[in-house]
Length: 306
Ligand SMILES: Cc1ncc(COP(=O)(O)O)c(C=O)c1O
Image 1 (cartoon, protein in one colour):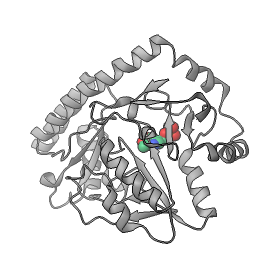
Image 2 (spheres, rainbow, N blue to C red; image 1 turned 120 degrees about the horizontal axis):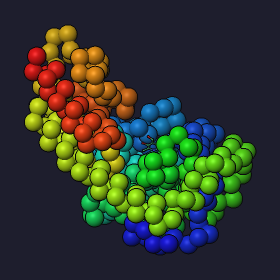
Image 3 (tube, helix red, strand yellow; image 1 turned 90 degrees about the horizontal axis):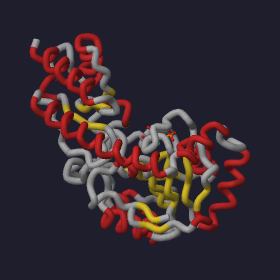
């Protein structure tokens, strides 16, 4: 099957393998007494004990809130076992360009490490220049994906890994012992995802998400909630509320709390995504209908004006 500029041999796929991949990773890394580099950019993956962090003194916005090869090379230590990335990312909706991903893969290879790329939002990519799977870069990468986002199956606990051939058997053993198998109901639902109707529906959703982005981002910017980098995928806007902070509302946490009470709009404060810009940024999810998003923007505007 060819998708995202890559052809996959059927034997490389494990459709029934991994359910909660972040827990797998922690388990693997801790047993090896090492660390995996994640980034200090805002990231869902950057939380938790076993992940070492790449310190950033570079301009996060110029890097689209993503890691680059130079940062990986600089942060590599004797304890480092590999690099974990998400592209497109949660919470920023930004991706790593294929050329940069190739450079990162070279750095990781050169140090004998593993590159793990979470592509869970790749099916919701809005721009041709970014919708490339890292799998095109070689058979030595681990690529993580899930039915959750592209096929609206959040909570169904079904995902997959594409692995280097040598890792298939060890990961099968892990999956067998950690999970045995995913729920039968979810497996039947996943098979239905590959019908032409479901794929067409998923494509329509991708277009719809792009329209929602084009509604939400200008809406936030118009009320002084800057979105420093235009998301190129997923369904999140990562916005800066600095201009609306003041005494009694000094952080994005306080800002989100107040908006929840006064505007009845739920936003996610930056601190949920690691230390980078945690106190001044928040995430807005546009996984909701355009009328609901318009209403949310209107209410935010009213709350901020009063
Ligand atoms: C980047 C990223 N990876 C993984 C997940 C988890 O996905 P799943 O529902 O397959 O456990 C999420 C969910 O929000 C995510 O944002």
